[in-house]
Image (cartoon, rainbow, N blue to C red; front, side, top):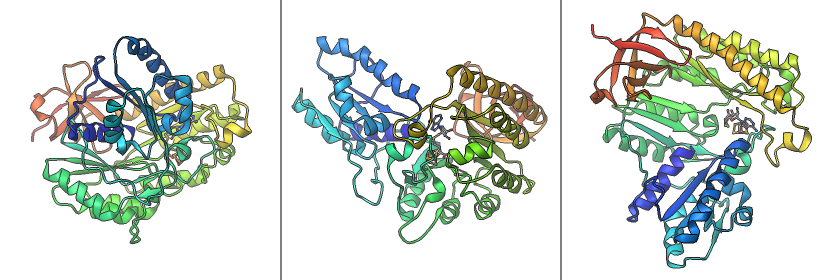
Length: 423
Ligand code: SAH
Ligand code: SF4
């Protein structure tokens, strides 16, 4: 979602005649920030520090937007007085006016972190994307769940959804422009509500009916809200990718309760069983936090056994990071850093073995792959199956943006390797 916000800011500025780039010689530096973990926040201040010296020799603007801007507000000017503007998560669409004003009134400062009262996210059409085959579409924003560790409800505010017709209109425009894959985005897609009463399942079925749309993905679905109705829409529609990101965070009921996740390990596993019992190959991924306050060795081992039981095709795992104002931050002492790190490393090793096993079983299979880019090493193409498995294979770069068939020939823990398959 942050990437999409950045693309909107770049789009708005370009529509007003500015050029966006990532060069060091820019006249305006804009930081779109994340504050979900402390490390992301610290990065901002180290970047800002580097710009400070430069500002002595030349005139340029520095703006801080996004989640850190939202929660830190005025304090950013105190810590970094050379910053010119601070715009919150619900105000970034004003970037064009703000920049124009500050160019004309260099030296003044602007702070706007209002969480405005509008019941809808702003409709922004100016979005700068470098690729046309894959598009990201915001359907709702904000979060009302208040998991005890999470800063998102404070940075993104309360939930609000776009109107169904606006979402459909945007998707249709992208398809007309050649998009193959659409990613529907929201902190909690299941909480999507159109004012006329349409929910996420309605929206997903409407989007899947759009002619010419080959792939639909969505993120993130909260495990407490994932249900049979949503699963059956996914199964019934070929163009909805068979990948589900269902973050459990922990495998221990004691920790899940303290996290305020509103489901038990058993309820979570029932949903996983529901997915597996379709008999369709789904990619299942998840997020995990290790070292949540009071997590015992036994609690941690329950997370490992959950990994073993579910067999995720990929995971994101994090050390617990205390975030200001959250319930866990107010209530608990943070755990020893060494234990957190050891648990994280061990969990990642454990998962690596599971992924190796899973990936091994895919050798010989043929998958449809949407080709995304040249691989990091530069010698092969990189793409994804609908399950979100990453596949590397040799082929012409003209294939980028197309769906091709690839036969899997080899694997590592993170990726599959294959060759173009023709019947
Ligand atoms: N809305 C999504 C998550 C968004 S945040 C959901 O509920 O699934 C993305 C991930 O960051 C979370 O799933 C969680 O694993 C991680 N995360 C959030 N707050 C964190 C914290 N304080 N410390 C460590 N990881 C955190
Ligand atoms: Fe954070 Fe929980 Fe909301 Fe996800 S559901 S954004 S983890 S509070």
